[in-house]
Length: 267
Image (cartoon, rainbow, N blue to C red; front, top):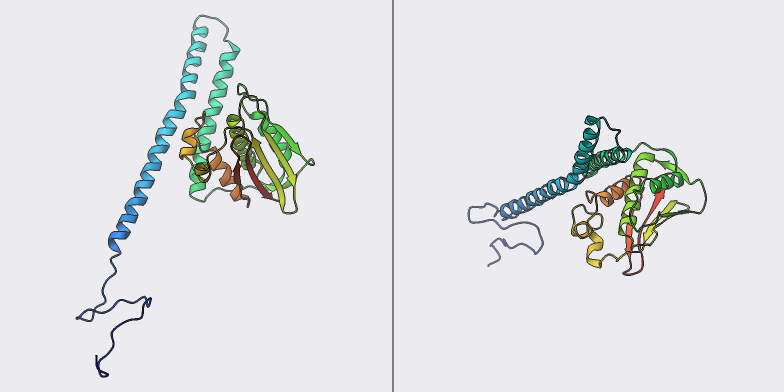
């Protein structure tokens, strides 16, 4: 190239493309990559939808079967002019509440994923909420009632009592169901300058390191390996509610020792 010719070369990293002989810019081959990325996202959405449908059908079948079976027993007793067994009525009531909670969880799952979960904050005592959450845990064979430890009572902050009770309930129920037989889960509440530190701990089989990042993901391998009578989205909901309060939950696990769910809830 002589000194009268224009140097069309571009410095590395200039971000521009050279012109062709017609003076047009060469196009970046981004169409195929963008299309592939869109297809991958659609495939992921479809997979999550299928997982949701399959899990919902499976988990709804249990309480529905109980409702139908015990309703038939009540109908038979009434048709024969006999009194209803109170235990049958209790089962029907319990399974109906369970179904109602599952429907609420699905609705909240959608709200959290869309970023539309609303908080109705008011002065709230977290000690009282934790105690009620423990009392609502259904009896589980081989698992004693969790113990509540609070450094002082009450511990009040500006929180949404209903949402916070929901998050505590999911965390405590997970701890009870994951505890080794005969082991007692603990809920510890400790005040700090920035808020109250909540620790839900239990002794269980431990969480493999490769599954720790998936603990709060619904329908992940973590939940498939730990089959419970739930939709498997409780921990996801708990995290979404805690995040909405400005907290940040994390999980710690030591094989054969203790699993801990820890978060600080800002005042």
